[in-house]
Picture 1 (cartoon, chains in turn yellow, red):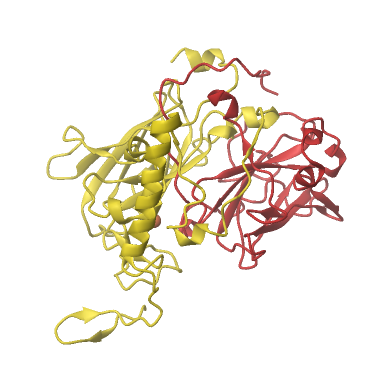
Picture 2 (cartoon, rainbow over the protein chains, first blue to last red; picture 1 turned 90 degrees about the vertical axis):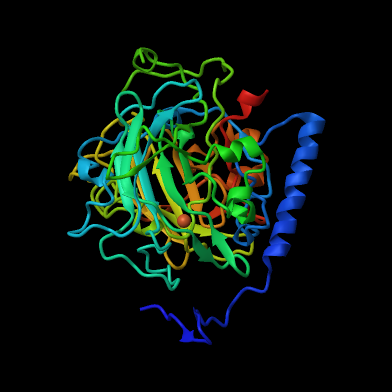
Amino acid sequence: MPTVGVMTDTVRQPVDASTPDVTQAQISAQMEDAAQSYLRGLADHGRRELHPRLDYPAYRSSVLRHPTKDPVPVDPEGVELWSPVFGERDVAAVEADLTAVHAGEPLGERIVVTGRVLDAHGRPVRRQLVEVWQANASGRYAHQRDQHPAPLDPNFTGVGRCLTDDQGWYRFQTIKPGPYPWRNHRNAWRPAHIHFSLFGTEFTQRLVTQMYFPGDPLFALDPIYQSILDPAARERLIASYDHDLTQPEWATGYRWDIVLDGTRRTPTEEDVDA
Amino acid sequence: MPEARGIRPVETPALDPTPGQTVGPFFGFALPVPGGAEIAPAGAAGAVRLHGRVLDGAGSPVPDAMVELWQSDTDGAVVQQAGSLRRSAGEFTGWGRAATDADGWYEFWTRVPGGGFFSLAVFARGLMHRLFTRAYLPTAASDPWLSTLPQDRAGTLVARAQDDGFVFDIHLQGDQETVFLDFSARDRR
Ligand SMILES: [Fe+2]
């Protein structure tokens, strides 16, 4: 059991001696500097950054974990022009329903999340693996290392898998995850998100990312979301609420399409006849 | 072996990509699967071990990283076989996934790739976006593309032979920083 804390005057609060000493204001100032310098550069030379900055010190764990040398340009060859194959035997159909894993219903807001996986030319990525993982409705992961004092839900694990269909569609039924605190700085909170892992038709398209929910008040404060300096690029991580996906008396619906990096190989007939 | 695929001239992509994000600290209960790193049965005839450490810029192990391996079969063929998440004995899929342990070690059991290198993708908490690299076999160290790199940089891409296979450390940063690959560079020219 996590240590929940003691009663103070009227409000129960966690007791924690190791609160980081960096403030949100300091982190926000760092993020603002990076954002401004990116926008100035964009005005100068027009080069957009479509992925996060690897060197983004406002996410403090990145400081010793980002390469300092430029990646070396190389044409993909051999296996890199192909992707591993996953099939029905890798993924059971029930794995797309994160609410159906345990005997009881998980607590929280039941949602449907669906969309298409496409390549940069708009072609569907067919019959390919999509994996998700997330916190429960209280913002707690069913992971040993998550010790934040919010309740675990015995009816929710928060891991899902599915294969895209022939038009590139994936679909999960789950619970809307809660925001959660982390130790990047004092009073750091992650906006609610679902982690996604994706494969394309080529190894070079491999992507791990996070999907967010519209209107989250924590976006501006979060160095992971803000590490994508291009405003239009980071908004691609926000799903849209879609009332047509909402099911009466059952679940609200979110739509989120995913576009993988461009492929370099010659398209085969199978790719083109989509 | 599937039909050969060539590199085509780059068309301007119609859609901007969905950006990456860090894998975070909590992937361990979701992405690694039992047997996921055992692409060939450990210790079996013809099986080799590929292992190494993921290290940060201070030389400290990264205990919350994940490495994915994708490779050709021993004869160089690209394998298009499902089953990497639920393996059957004797079936080789060419793809595996390994989380690092408390000392930053990852470990695969696999076969020697006929293509000359193991293709790797690296993920970690604190790493904003996945990195690609290659672990070349010691016998492929004279690869023409490798020889276009400065010698000390090229050396970071060559695995070291050991009794049961190969060692390949991945330095995210620092003096021995591994060469990471940019497959999309041509798209921007
Ligand atoms: Fe998370």
